[in-house]
Image 1 (tube, one colour):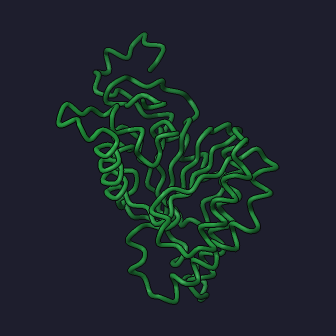
Image 2 (cartoon, rainbow, N blue to C red):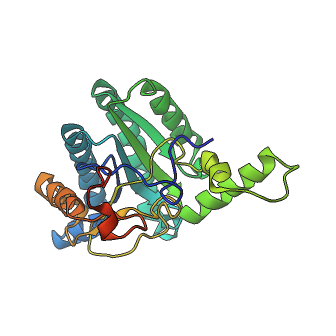
Image 3 (tube, one colour):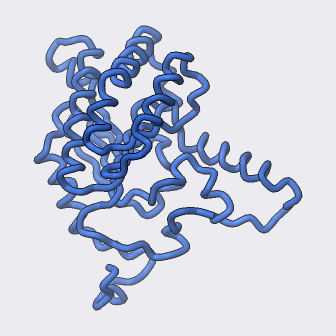
Length: 253
């Protein structure tokens, strides 16, 4: 059974501060290029911004933060850049976990982790175990993740769980097998860097998420930019299929 209700099956509670924020952190390479620096310098700066984003969510009492760090399509990038990104991932896992733990942040990593080398897989498992008891903020890193992969792996797992069942499947049957089964659907999706697409990120979960696109590059997405995104979210009329008239007097709207 799913922990959280689907927005297509039940009307979720609408809150002033988004409970779950999902982010595509785009623009690291362009930030570096503008400064005549190697692309990798932009990714290093991007990790620093992750620390600030975590702090910003803690200050604003956001409960869930999901960051798209490395897509299943990012393996198509130049081999040197991918290698450097993997090294940065290792460094971040080694250096950031204690800080996350001391601030009550629980870390999870979702995606097809089998493609990462053994060292990275071990660090991920250790980081998840170290922070498992925390609940102030649930931070999820999507790495080697793709929305279509997620749906397909969940579908296969669902079918294998009850091989005798031939038909009659529902959303509730599938959702426990999705990578993000432990979190509510995102209230707010943010993409920095100017592109206006979701790029195979959380395809199932973003059904009724409010989308916010900004030209601001990720290394420049500071506290004020985050507040602008939340302010935009707060102006949205979250109808979930209903009419505006139905929302009048509805305390859940």
